[in-house]
Length: 424
Image (cartoon, rainbow, N blue to C red; front, side, top):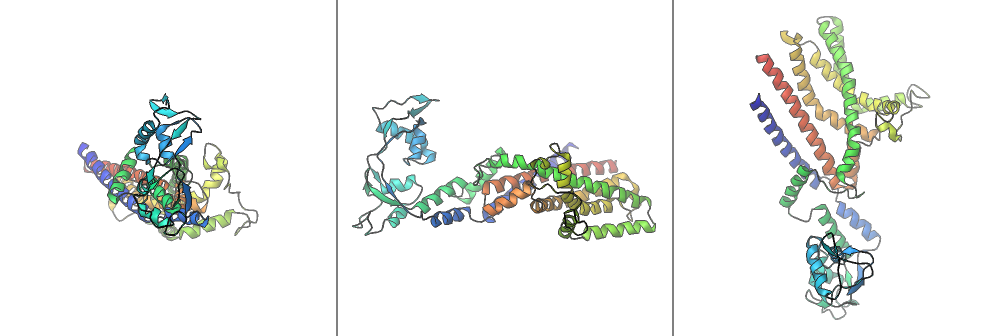
């Protein structure tokens, strides 16, 4: 048994690696270009280029570490923040910098010398762009380059003006923030490392941790899936065992035909039919059977509002559970094998059916969340796809993949245990 567990565990790890690799490729390829969206909005606001004056000194507005000031004032890049602190210490030998948490800091009101000169190449490097980007924004004959003599090694002094390509700078910083400014191999390594640490970064829209967003909405998706499984079991198991008990009679054939029709029923039509039947001014009832609390936040959790939860989740749970009930019925119903009365054989068929239906159930419930405006994983996933929110897409996809691989591992181990008992 130990060797069996190890083997299935290794298969699960391999499956997880393949699935996460596919997620990485899809996240990098499928969503719209978030960078292009932001740049289009920026250009619409007329901020494609912006005249900038070279700053030589500043007065610190609030207490801050020197490394933070150096990055904020574009003396160095963020990854070289410690070098920026050393530069400020070197350029301000007569200023006293107290240590805060072991790091030199400047008090509010302190006058700091930032630079006495800077070349265009150094300026471009600090902004993560190329020297040619700055030169293109300052063509010969312009106010900042009247004689056309600007070059990468041209020295600028405090008070000089230069036109900075705002769009290019924003693009470079967004790509840096999303981690897409490096090679695909480096991005892939970072992606796997972040998955191992469950660190997907912050949402590009809300600036909130992507994993914390998933943590809020995950219970709602779990509730919907469990509710759908309960509905399927309450319908499929009794009918299946009834057909097994009535084997050979006409009613058993009727039940089997009904399950086939239920399985073939278009799921989206079923959803719309249920909504129309329950909602006010629907197909059958003028006042509706009950009110669906789409905007009631307490209804998202069964512990907060049981009645609201049932009113909100019952329709999508029934829509997802009915096709699965037909599958459960087929696993329990009579078969040509003489051993079908063995409960272990029925359990094996149920596990095999669940293994096939699991991704269908989860995927369909994602779409149901969108149709019923249930803020679960599916609702968040479709919204983040529309907004090209790469960190949030990665977090939702990876959590879903981890959950499915875990379920497959549990199902496979249960099936292996049943097979082992049958052989014994």
